[in-house]
Image 1 (cartoon, helix red, strand yellow):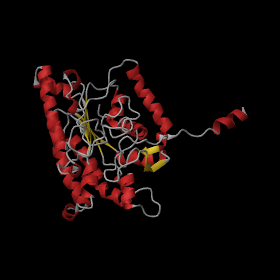
Image 2 (cartoon, helix red, strand yellow):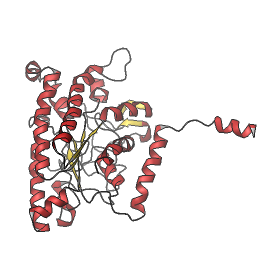
Image 3 (cartoon, helix red, strand yellow):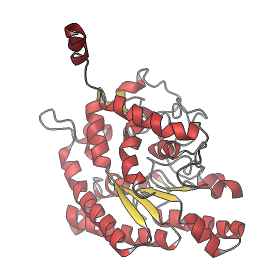
Image 4 (cartoon, helix red, strand yellow):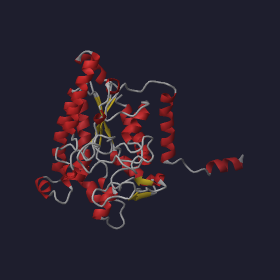
Length: 357
């Protein structure tokens, strides 16, 4: 008995990735056994972290429908800014959807739009002007206009606005916005005018005022279960680390992380306010900083990209060979996480999502 007790106590504790794997398998079991998804429909808004092809036909350098993107995705390069699935894809799988939600740009058919649409666009922001230096994108206001088109089609399919409203009220809405309002707007070297006009807290307040109006518009279009992701630790991206450098061997550019912190504080408050205002709806805050912090501890390679990147865009160079050991890399290109990092993030978001379903 003594030797057995010794061997049990000598086993290493489970890692974060092992625990998450157990959660994912348990959640996926329902879908595998033929159960219906947790919600009948799923609508996705956001930037390149969620984009699955909406930028492909835009006049922009911010599109990735080429190799090596999608090297680990069944359909190959689709416009996803990763080697595989996005966090939005993985949340869909955890909800029990058997197929990926199609991009709005693919003109989904009547059957598809009843299940959901992805409106996310690489480089897009809360503000119209964010991310436009690289060309066109679909900012959040325009994503909501696209959703209006979808809502009108659903009303036609179901026969009335009331029926459409009842259907949409059961859907999950997820939105990941704000990253480009910092990365491709406020902290750009050429953005001195906006920095002179707003200090970081004032800029966060400016963004949240606009974002609040957009989320209220989403509610008026039928959203009743809404998950809002905070801005990630942008100072931990290889792009910013290469451009700015870190002090005393620090893992991240902490000054950049401090600039975005007021936005997340205000977004948490906005979620609380929305829950107190709309008693027929539920809103959740998804903690992107927590995801990033845990990822830095989980992955062995956190400062280098898996693919060879352009010094101009930070995106993978076309048709180049990516790293072999992608499981070790947090970042795929200079901004976006690998499929393996997204596999860590989705289960961390999921409990907050479950609470609003």
